[in-house]
Image 1 (cartoon, rainbow, N blue to C red):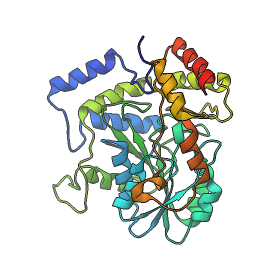
Image 2 (image 1 turned 60 degrees about the vertical axis):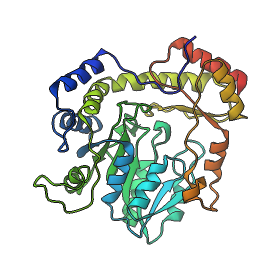
Image 3 (image 1 turned 180 degrees about the vertical axis):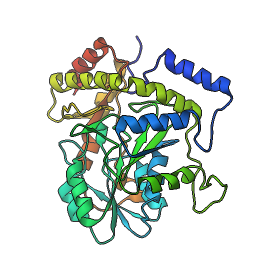
Image 4 (image 1 turned 135 degrees about the horizontal axis):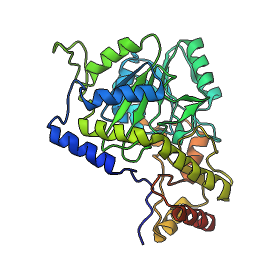
Length: 356
């Protein structure tokens, strides 16, 4: 019996042909982002309806480069502890101080009342994380940013294709960071993107084009520090094909989440939202370790999210984040990827109800 995986890229002959075309072209990468990379940037910009788009090699690079735009040295950046540690690293490596805030237990996005309380004269950026694909309340966050003159960088690594009030995630914040890692909604061997919006988007794009190429400008001059972070042609070619299938993939994920929401009998589970792209589906169980092992024995792979950042050695604080810590102890992640068959989904539901 084959194992049901927690994550599994959805692809077909189109991606195989695209990879082979790049291979045969002998143009596998361009530090200036020509060819497939620039084509992908144009199409992803159109898809999310952003002002600008810059492709990079990962979601982590997207966060690092976006943060470098905001002059956070000796400033504070508010973010949830419930996210990938690269978000905190992006702040630290740019000279800022991460300020961790708890999440709303209903959707695991930033608790905005706590965000408001955490704002000080040193606050430079707010980084909401669209957890699992569930959009944060961007209207309220944008109001806070406007009132306190704070920049908005969204972590949308788990939310490619998600919407907020019928507008795609990627069309709101000053900078919005996406990941195209194989475990994400849109998959490539390695990849990410930054979408830009607002009056500074053209200026920021020019800076980022150099930043992703070790700071090197078109005339080979270097005016600021950069990183080797540009996307390769293979990833761009795959992303172009994945983008064509994205709405279909999200529809499948939503229908799987809908079945989980309606049929799984647990007290706490991920809400159902037609605007969510469902990178995974979280629920609380009594004993996650035992549950995962029992599901493994039935050839079902179950996930766990990253440990909260404020509990990691490097960032450890005495600050209590109640809802974040409850989630860390109680949750498991169920698969939503489009390769699941109806039989797979029903098996997951049946055994989840049995072992949860």
